[in-house]
Length: 390
Image (cartoon, rainbow, N blue to C red; front, side, top):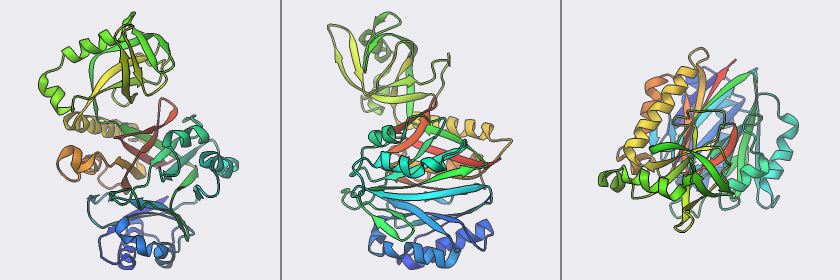
C-alpha cells in the first residue's frame, strides 16, 4: 500500500490542487493513484467542479471522494480559519475502495440506500467512511439505517462542514458535487484498522453499576438513586473544576459489559437531559441497560489534552507490530483552537507518536466511530482512524 498526503493554501483552487496533489504523489512515490481523498475549505466552492479533472490529470486516479470543511488538516498541520486543500492519494493491490455519493433527492432513507449500494462488497474486513451533510440526514439516523454493528462493519468519518452560517456544505464523488447528501467510501481487503475516540472528557467520581433503568432513564446506580450519585460526584469537585467545564456535566456509558474496568476511550459520552427529584432518576441522551457501568464526566481543555495523549499512546502500542500506512482524523469544530486556545494541538500529539504517518482530515459537524463494537455518532469528539497493511 502506497499512500501520500499533500496540502496547499494557494488562492486559486486549480493552483492549490496542483500543488497538493503533486506533493501527495511525491510523498507516496507514485506515478498513478487508484483513489484520491480530498477535503477543501468552502471559499473554493465556486471552482469545486475542477476537483476531479485537475486531480486526475496529475495523479491518474480512478476515483475521487471527499467533502468541504470549515477547516482541513493533514500531517503538516490544522488549517483553521484559513483557505486550504488537503489531498490523500492511495494505490494498493490489496485494498479496494468503493466510493459513493447519495443525495437526499435520490432517497429519503439515505442510510438504507448506502447499505444497499455497498452490501454486495462488504467482506470480513471492511471499513465504511461516511461524510454526510447533516442538513439532509441526522447522524444518528444514518448510523441506525446503515447498521450499528461496528464489528462487522465499522463506520467512521465526519459530517461535512462549510461556511460558518451552515449555508454552504458540499460532498463529492468523481465529477459529481452536491449539497444535502452523503459522500463516502467502503474500503475492503488486506488491511487492519485501529480506531481511537477522544471525547475531551475527564471522569469524575466512581464507576457505578446501573441497577434500575428504563430506556434512557436511570433510576438507580449501585442500588441508590442516580441523582444522589450525581450530587456526590459534583461535591468532589472544586469551583475551578466546574468553571473550566462551563458547569456542564456528561455521563459516560461503558459499552462492553464484559469489561470490568473501562478506561478512557471505552465510554460513550452523552448529555444529561433531565432529572426528577422525587424519584432520584436522571435522563440521558442514550438508552442504558441494567448492569452497564457508568461514570460522570466533565469536558474541558485539560481533560481533552490528557485524553488525546492517552488515546494516541494506546493506538501506538496497538500498532507496534503493524505500523499504520495512513491515518484519517475527523475532528469536531468545537475542538481545535476554540478548545485549547492554540493551533495544531491534536495533530502535534499524533505526530509525536507517528512522525512519518500520512494523515488527512477536517473539522466537522459530527464524528462517527465505534465504541465497544457498536457504531455511534458523536459530538465534540476527535476520531482517529489508522489503517495498516496485513
